[in-house]
Amino acid sequence: MTPGTAAAPFRGVIERAKLIQYAQALHLHNPIHRDRSAAVAAGFRDVVAPPGFVISNTLQPKALKLSTFGIDERRALAGEMRFEHLGVICAGDELHGQSTLLDVVEKQGRRRMTAFVIETTFDNQLSDRVLVFRETALQAED
Amino acid sequence: MPTAAEYLSPSVTRLDIAATCVATDDPAPVHLDERFAVEEAGYPSVLAPGTMLLGWAGEYLEQLAGGPVGVRSWTVRFTSPVWPGDRVRLATKSVKMPDNSGGQGGIFEIVATTDAGVVVGEIHAELAVTPDGGGSATPEAPG
Image (cartoon, each protein chain N blue to C red):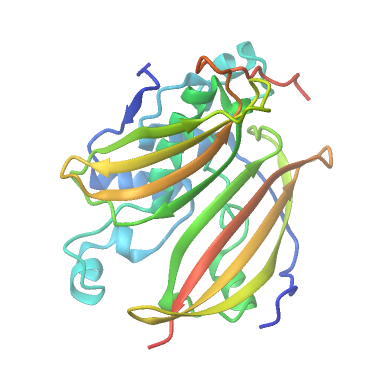
């Protein structure tokens, strides 16, 4: 797969119920992640997505993303993830995203691996870029 | 709310793992199907999805930065699985305040370990903090 290849754009709404489910499952402490009133009182539009909630698989199927870049999901491992937060994401935000393959690197360690570096950008309904998410997917080759 | 010196997750339960998978639309059987995890994937049990560590790390970074607006960028490296029964402790190992930051940025090196002392993640974060360690971020105006 050639670096620069882009997956199909995707879009979706960040659902308040999902954020609340997530905050409850992780027993998060800050009420802005599960209580709309608390979030609004703190100056936000709605329940706030915790940093780390929105990743490339949040609004697009992981299998579709991986297959677009020729990655075998059965042999894929999550490597490093990087978040660049450019704006706060709240419940009700409609995000537009697109994943692009930035680099493919062969690695020889204990196992022969191929590292796929993928960047996914997220813009909100105001056309503001709110998140740049970069991940390394590792594929075992032997 | 806990102090920002460190962050301690609750003990991971299979129910919380399943609830996280539901919230994040993650159907991977290594998190949800004990038989698959043990017999087919070769793990000792189901394992927690990485999204759990991401969420705890995200809240810890918010505490350090004084809110979500102060969390600028961070990189996480997963180094070992988190299992049911584990508690994850996030602690800051070092902070660098660049001389030219004007009190607006700090570089934090954070490690995540289990009660058993296993390092499960390493985090490098740039946060908007003041030199005295306080968060400088304020919420953005509603859009």
